[in-house]
Length: 80
Image (cartoon, rainbow, N blue to C red; front, side, top):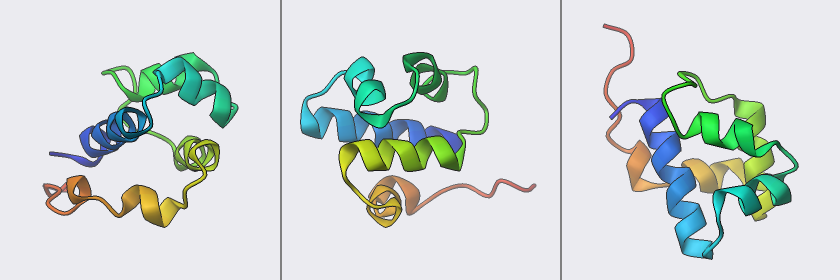
């Protein structure tokens, strides 16, 4: 799994834990739903840290909490 896939998986995991839809996540995070959806599909190859921070703020978690997940423990090497 690469970092983009891990971020995607973590966002979905957090939404499922809180029982919220992607649109609601966008609303509480103050970012357009299209931005969140692009982070979750093939359009975005590089989810921006500013958007990730806004998602964290909307969910009332820290960046550390966001990245403190098993999905980030075994990332593949990005530079080959």
